[in-house]
Image (cartoon, rainbow, N blue to C red; front, side, top):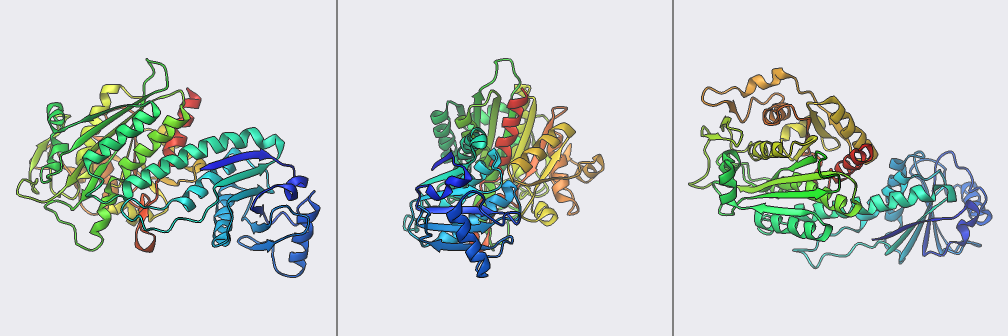
Amino acid sequence: MNVQAIAVGAAGLSGVSTDALVVVLTPAHKAVAGDTALDRALQSAAKAGDLQIKPGQSLYLHGVEGVKAPRVLFVVARDASAKAFRAAVAAALAALKGRSFKSLAVAPLAEATDAHAEALCLVLEQAAYVYTHTKPSAESAVVPTKATLLVAASALSQAKAGVKRGLAIAAGVTEARECANRPGNVCTPTWLGEEAQRVGSAHGITVKVLDRKAIEKLGMGSFLSVSAGSDEPPRFIVMEYKGGTAKAAPVVLVGKGITFDTGGISLKPAPEMDEMKFDMGGAASVLGAMRAIGELKPKLNVVALIPTCENMPSGRATKPGDVVTSMSGQTIEILNTDAEGRLILCDALTYAARYKPAAIVDVATLTGACIIALGHHHAGLYANDDDLADQLLSASRDAQDPAWRMPLDDEYAEGLKSHFADVANVGGRPGGSITAAKFLQRFVGDTPWAHLDVAGVAHKGGAAKGATGRPVGLLTHFLLARAGKA
């Protein structure tokens, strides 16, 4: 993706050489100050009633006198924020769909920041991405091959930094979407391990992929219980990015990598089971974040742990009522084999302790209960540390990747008591996302830890079916902020 930022004063917009010029207004902008040709076109359109300076309004003009760009699109954003700018550019791309143009210039009349530049990169990624791996006949998206953000000279340095960050996050989002969109017979645990090695090799990240024998040696009985019914061998992926000092404690990311989830013996209903290929969305987002970090090279140590396997029913599969021993030594009564994500994550969380991490963040499409609680807009955020929670919430706002903090009171753990083991893997239906988080909390000790339940945001169903790449942006902003403070 070719995106750049250049300095162009308001008076110079008409002279920009581009196939299409998008001018982003806000309700506060009744004129294009300093540019006579564009302002004349805007005033004429407003006087004729063709354009109202109200949020969501737009007007396409061709061959505006005095303007070098043959296509001009005025679009009105809700306000001057990066979020509103992103929505306005998305609307502009939709309005330009079907028109032949290879280059695009975007001019926000409000003061542009690094956040606006990042938003431009991300909206272009969203528009450009088309899944073709198993559908090579898919129509290509009609998007510009070159995009330029036009900013005031005083904002250029910020804008360039935003473009650099935005392109890296966009690459990470594409990585996550591409992994999660591949069907379960393509994106197997073995393939996911190979993809992690490809990302690591390209970006200077050390990668180890442990096989079943190595996982058994570690004593990950909980993880292995999930893979017991599948013919596909499990993998445990370890990625180490060393951007900080040798003695600096790393941040550990843990991603749930169930490449297909039937529910096991607790079989899911058939409708929409095909979407269970997306149950490795947490792993995909962690892999995407590592790609973004590999491109940006922050001064921070980061470890990514991805336990990955299938959850299948067979004569070898774990049964409801079985008791397994986790890597931590805690025994777990498996009351429902469809609550498998926490069973692979708990062993990865125990493994994380060997790094003596500064913080652990796990990401998982963990519970349908989180969707009931928060819908498809916010990810659920749980944390045992207020400062870590605040950092992640701040990152979610900066990345326009919303998360909402949920409770983690000790009383919620009562439902996980078992007559036959240290803990049961499920409680009752009430607060199901919370009890899942309480289960995971048992395996992190006093380490600052957060859990992101992304079941409602990592993919979409219906006509828009596909992976979203969330929360790559949130994770990347969180890691960059940690590096900045370090």
